[in-house]
Image (cartoon, rainbow, N blue to C red; front, side, top):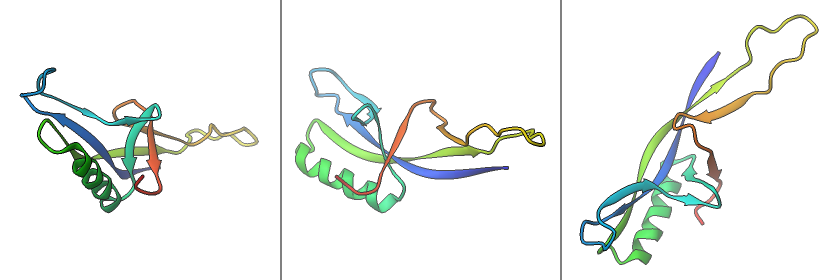
Length: 101
């Protein structure tokens, strides 16, 4: 049994006029991607970040990403099940924030 869960990653976009050139990448905070379980929370965080950045060389956006939850397979009688896990499709950790920081 598998289910897909939608999360919203915050992305940083650097403009071409930056001394480092144009680039886009997911925002990493405390060693994990900055992501939220609802679009509204992610939008609130990007609005806060955009207000602080000035908007000339850097801006922030959100991108939805899917996380697949997999249940253990081949359970034998009396055997132990593998723990449930959630792995983002990008193969990187995703910490879900319960509020916009």
